[in-house]
Length: 122
Length: 254
Image (cartoon, rainbow over all chains, first blue to last red; front, side, top):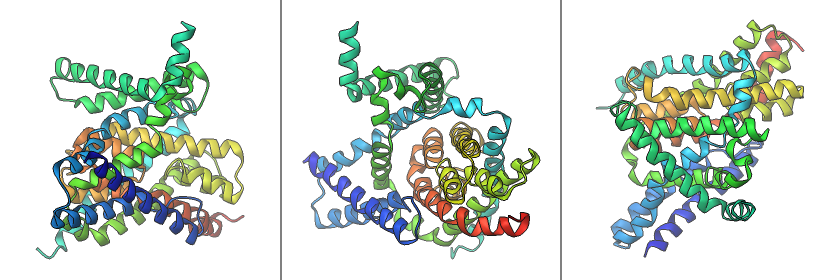
C-alpha cells in the first residue's frame, strides 16, 4: 500500500531529525546537526532490510518515489520564497561576501576529489 | 474577485501545486525552444522561482519572497523546510551506500574546509570594506557560511543588527550563487559523480543552494550533496561563535 511507503519515509524523517535536534542540544548549538543526513542513512538501511525480508512491494516503494519526484517542484517553490530582495539591495559587500567563498570552495573541489581518489583502495 | 482571493488564500497549498506545475511546464517549453535543451528545464524553473521571489519581496515588502503575497502563501508551506527535508530524505532511496561509506573521511574534511574557507572569504571581504572590529568581522564571516550561521553567530557574540542583516544577505547571496552557478561550473570541476557531489555538498554547505544546484545539474547527485551539506549549518553554528571567534580575537583583539 502506498501509505506504507509514505509512513516509512515519515518514520525515517522524524527519527533522523530528532537525532539531529538532540545532537545540536548535546554540543550546545541552536541548530539541527545532520538531521536530514541521519534520516537518509536510516531510510537506506530500512528500505534495504525490508527489501530483503520481502515486505517492500511496488506500491509501497511508490509512496517514497512520489516524494522523490516532487523534489524539484518543491525546490522551485523554495527558491520562490527566498529573500532575494535583501540580497539584491544589500549592496556590493553582501554580494561579494556571498560570492567570494563560493569561488574559493569551487576551486578546492577538484583538489579534494583528486586527493581522495588517489588514496582509495581500488 | 474577493471571493477568489479568499478561496485561494484558504487553499494555498493546492494553489501552489498548480502554480509550480505551470512554472515547470513553461520552463520546459523555454528550455526546448529557446535554449535547445542546453539549459535544463529545472534550472530555468529554479531561476524563475528566484525572480518571482524578488518581485514578491518588492511588492509585499516582506522577507519570504512570493509567500508574503496572500494568494501565494501556500508557497511558504510547499517550499518550507518540512517539505524540502521530507523530499530530500526520499532521494536517499536511490543512493548507494557503498559510495557513501567510501567517502567518509573526505566528507568530513570537505565540511571542515568548507566552513573555514567560507569564513575566511567572508572575513577578507569585510576587511577590504573597512570593518576592523572582531565581532563584525566574525559575524560577516559566519554569514558567508550560510544565512543561518550568520545570525546565530552574531546573536551569540553580540553583533549589531545591521551587521547581522548583512550576514544574512551574504548567506542568501551564497545560496543563490550556488543555485545558479552549479549547472554551469559542473563540467569544469568534475561534478558528475556521487563522490564529487559529496565533497561539493560539504564545501558549499548551503542546503538550499546545494540541493537546488544539483537538481538542476543532475538529480541523481542530489542525495549525495545533501548528505554532507546537512551537517554544515550545525557545525558552522558550533565553530563560528566559539573556536573561530576566539582565533579572530587573538588576531584582531577585542
